[in-house]
Figure 1 (cartoon, helix red, strand yellow):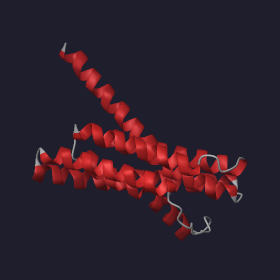
Figure 2 (cartoon, rainbow, N blue to C red; figure 1 turned 90 degrees about the horizontal axis):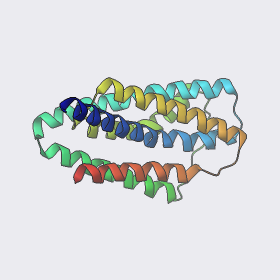
Figure 3 (cartoon, one colour; figure 1 turned 45 degrees about the horizontal axis):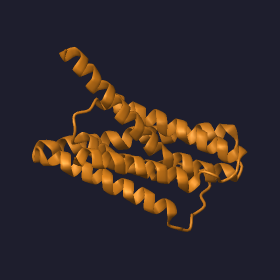
Length: 189
């Protein structure tokens, strides 16, 4: 009976991490569409997506370690803090999706612009990493899934932007924010 319970808990944790990985990849997807609409070579899609995937691994890893340290200091209050952080981050993503801010155009072919793009779409992974560090989670699996989905969502967004119109931009980011809000509420309850 304990084996079934442990397997069920592990499956639930995996599903949670997968959904968070998709939610975090929505920024790369949304911004990728915008870059792809300008016209982009397949080689640049690959280059941008690899760097984005690496940042989606590094940023939550740093956040996870920060969160584990905070968890050791705060104890049970850490779970509430992590849930609140996810709730705020998700709400901010939803707000940003529908708030019209002028977008600065970057030359994605330059190294600095590429790093800035990867940092901008993975900065929320740092915050989510802090939240996950407050809970018990498989660090390697979590950051690898974040990286894989960050890279895949980047490829998908760049490719769709290259071949299609702006149908998902702000709605993709809003969906990602709603998923994070839902997980924040789940952790708070």
